[in-house]
View 1 (cartoon, rainbow, N blue to C red):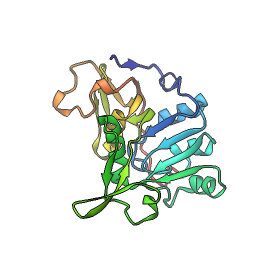
View 2 (cartoon, rainbow, N blue to C red):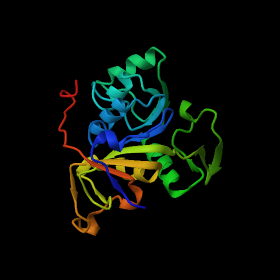
View 3 (cartoon, helix red, strand yellow):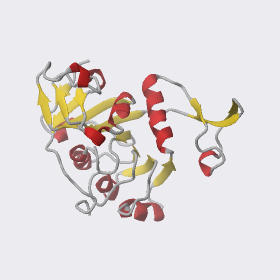
View 4 (cartoon, helix red, strand yellow):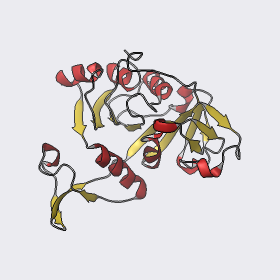
Length: 230
C-alpha cells in the first residue's frame, strides 16, 4: 500500500461519507488534528459517530464539529470538562447521543479492532451502569464484562513528523491515541508538521508504520491552551 500525500487538508478528507464512524486522536487539546477537523467541517459529512477521549474543548477542533451539527453520537471516556459547553448543550437538548467507555477499555477496544480480536473480557465497569446489558463471565474468581472492538471507517490523527512513505513520529504526550487509532480504521488520515524524504527518519523512532497511513498532509502546528480555545 502506498501513502498518498495530499496537497491540502480539504483534499485529505475528501470522500468521508455521511454516517461514518470517525476516530479522532487527541487527549484534550494535545494531539488533536485541528486542521483535519476544520477540513471535515468544510467537507460537509454529517450524521457522524465520533470516537475520541474527550467530547471537545472550547469552540475549536472536535467542539467545532459538534457545534456545526455534524455529529450524531459520541463515544468517549470524558464527555464533561470545564470547557465542554458545546457538548453539554447538545446533549442536554437531546441532539447528540453518548456512549461512555472507560479510558483503558476505549483504547483496548480499538486495539482489538486493529489486532483482529473478536471480543475480550475486562473487569472494568463491572457493577456499574456501564456494564448493564452486557454479557459477563467469572474468570479466576473475578467477574468480567464482554467488550467488543471499535472499528472506524476513518481515523483523523496528528503526528509530529512523517516521511514520504507515511511512517510517523509523534511529539511527547501528543502521541496518546494516535498509534492505536491508526490500526483500527479502514482509512487513516494523518496531519504532520513536517514531511521528509524516505530514509529521513530513524527507523527506531517510528511509532506508526506507513503501512497504516492512507493519506498524509502537512499542516502548521497549533499551540492552544484551554484558555486560548475558548
